[in-house]
Amino acid sequence: MLELRPNCECCDADLPPESAEARICSFECTFCAACADQRFAGRCPNCGGALVARPIRPAALLAKFPPSTERVRKAHAACVG
Ligand SMILES: [Zn+2]
Ligand SMILES: [Zn+2]
Image (cartoon, rainbow, N blue to C red; front, side, top):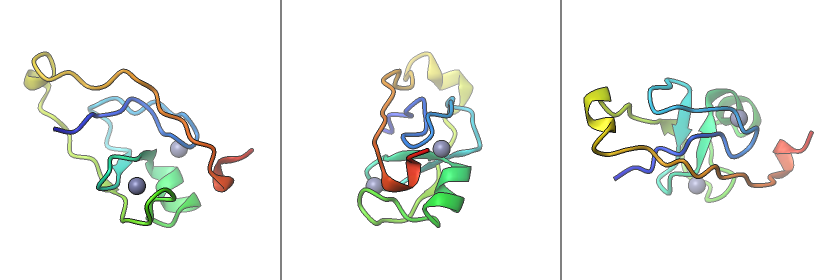
């Protein structure tokens, strides 16, 4: 099951579970659309895999299957500044 991480690991933008801006790779490295497209050209900087739009979990299921609250940050070269 997807963790649905709450933020972009590059710029720390909030990415709530209903966000259409969230992008993930197969390992669930999570980025906002701006970072995924503009900084990383659609490729995960951790694993090199494709970043795709994160599916949106139906709101009715979020209470039973809540999103992660653990914010993940990583210092990628493209994220500095
Ligand atoms: Zn970002
Ligand atoms: Zn990755």
